[in-house]
Amino acid sequence: MNVDIREAIRAELRERGLTHAQIAEQLGMPRPQITRMLTGQSGSVPEGWQKLLAALDLQLTVTRKDG
Image: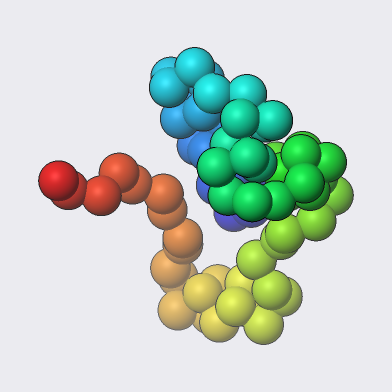
């Protein structure tokens, strides 16, 4: 689940031509934090949420907002 979300975000960054440094600057976050989030070193979906979603046979997905 977390892998799919990270890959969707990485793909969106590539599509928009944004680097980790550029998105980090836009968000006011350190670039290493963005890199850790996108490589799975931090920023995972909490285990409790993962268990709840699994029990209900649901999954998180990333989609573009309308507008």
